[in-house]
Amino acid sequence: MNKKLKLAVCQNKVIADKDKNLLKMKKMIAKAVKQGVELIILPEMFNCPYDNHYFPIYSEEIPGGKTYEFLSKQAKEHNIYLIGGSIPETVVEDKDEKLYNTSLIFGPDGKLLDKHRKIHLFDVDLSDGVTFLESNTLSYGEKVTVVETELINIGVAICYDLRFPELMRLMVDKGAEMIIIPGAFNTVTGPAHWETLLKARAVDNQVFVVGASPARNLEADYHAYGHSMIIDPWAEKLHEAGSKEDVIIQEIDLTKLEKIREELPLLKHRRSDLYKLEEI
Ligand SMILES: NC(=O)CC(=O)C(=O)O
Image (cartoon, rainbow, N blue to C red; front, side, top):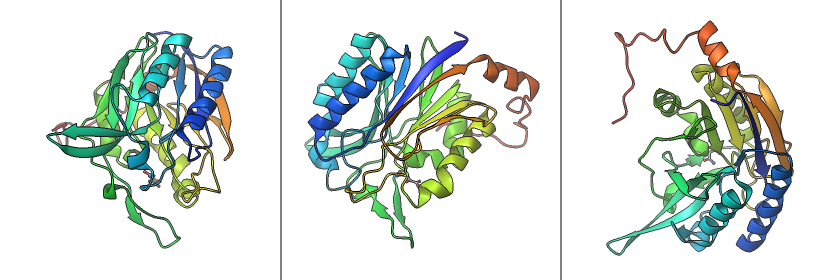
């Protein structure tokens, strides 16, 4: 394992124009690359407004869609690992069309290493005014996603998936050392839970956790919280964006993970004679 890793989160303001979103992202990626980063992380639905109305319109088949090609090219051109936030994905099977909220993970050669489809859909009706029914348009992902890279082993889950500690622990049991969450929490659940959940998952599992949110766009119907964040395995916040567009860059010391796991070996202290967690 390399001992230091420089990474970036590109927190873009998503608008209802896919091409402009991609162009903006291209500039943000170039800015991060100039600082020598090896891993770049984009937000949930970074190219499509977070809105059931837009998901089918912006959706792409994988491989081959415009955003897929864009991400692959960016990864290759800049020789970086790229976690492509998420995009709406169309899957056609036996004339049956399904949409997923899908994160694409590219290696420095531009090849797709894996993809994660959001497992838990955000179906909520909050008294403070946030109502969302993702299952109106989206289908449920069925796979736990962990990717081995030359930098670090990366688990990827999307937004609402963060609220399910069993999934995070499963990723850690499959080797994840960093959990990446492209996530569009909102102005109600964001201030209440985003940082707490990211820190809880870090301290529970002794992993780095990165949350990548879109910037807030008050002209959109759904107001993303922003506040992309990088947390270390001691649950210390290393970097945080505000609510506006930003590229946050952080060098992390990977030896911290080994050190914390050695000094406080909670993963080894589990009582597997009393309880266990299984992937089905
Ligand atoms: N948008 C989501 O998927 C989740 C979210 O906003 C929350 O859990 O809060």
